[in-house]
Amino acid sequence: MGVLEEFAPTFVQKPGLKRKDGGLRIECEIQASPLPTVKWSKGDQEVREDEHLRCGIDQTGGSLYVVYVEIKNATQADAGQYSLRASNKLGNVISTVNLDFEAPGKPVPKVEGQPPTFCVKPTVRHDKERNRLVFTCGILADPKPEVTWLRNDVRLTDVGRHGVVLDADGKSRYDATLSVDRVTVEDAGSYKIIARNVLGETTGTITINLDSTAMALPKKGIKPTFTHKPVIQQSEDGDTITFECRLSSDPKSTIAWYHGDKQMRDEVKIEIEEKKQKPSFVEKLVDKNGIVAGLIELTCKVEGHPMPTVTWYSVKWYRDTHELRSDEKFTIETKDGRYILRIKNPEVTDVSQYNIKCNKVTSAARLVVIGKAAF
Image 1 (tube, rainbow, N blue to C red):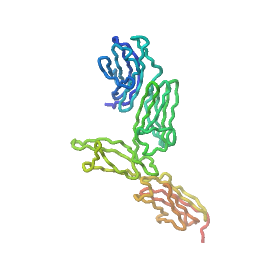
Image 2 (cartoon, rainbow, N blue to C red):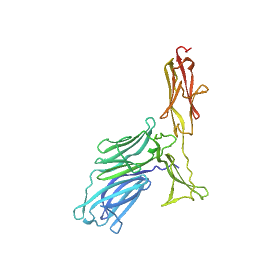
Image 3 (tube, rainbow, N blue to C red):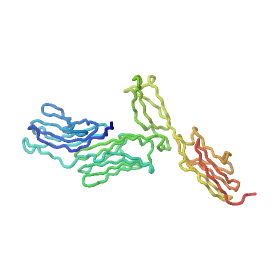
């Protein structure tokens, strides 16, 4: 059995007015999966069903629904602005329609343009070469919508690592893009786009989980960031329920679980797994040619978490099988993950293979010195 696709509500047909059985019906068609929750409002007040007003939603096939409010014996008292909000776990849409009366019993709709809807639902891709997240979607709207991007309910603006673009593609179609540069695990979270104009609004949500073992890590530590949101699992015998989540943090976080407003202590067993990134060479050593009495520098760059300077692994330089240390001949330096070996006044006798060992990974370079040996 295939998995049903889920998506936020969108308007197939915006709200309009119809005559029905001597009354008035405000009706629209929506596509959504799963079934949306709908709410009608008149002005600032929610529409309540009674003998005069009736609200309904009919499934017409698959993910298509007709949503309506029926008004029996409509009068001038029913005039005003009616709004519809349709929502599910993936987003919501809002649209409005004005009900006015030019003459008693003659409704005249005043709806012009189109409320925002997604013609291409929001998607995201990770450009690994540039280490960039790119969110895109297509929007139909008239007049032009105002677009807002948020991450964990905090607005993102076109500044720093974030780029926000809204391009027109025709009279009423727009392409919205959010880019996030230099991505780290801290960029995980719930991203939301809101597109609105005077006729309504629509929203879409994408949740990003980033593997802390594969993503770049900030150099100045990591604030607690959920890379995988909490999930609930029940044991096969039904006796145990496990709440599990993953987060990145540096330094190590203090964890507290709550049941309502009460912190859970002795009755809860908390297991914290600290994810480590094994060291790897981003830039390896390369062979060098030098001259007598010059200065030769061998460099490489290593990434890992915790960073290579901490105690869970050590970095050692080797010349063949002889360990090197800083002295008058050799200078060893570490800076921002870059490891440097400087050889002063090299001689022909310094020709050798030089290795750097970082935990279980190594890199090597061959040194050739041109000139005569000193006697």
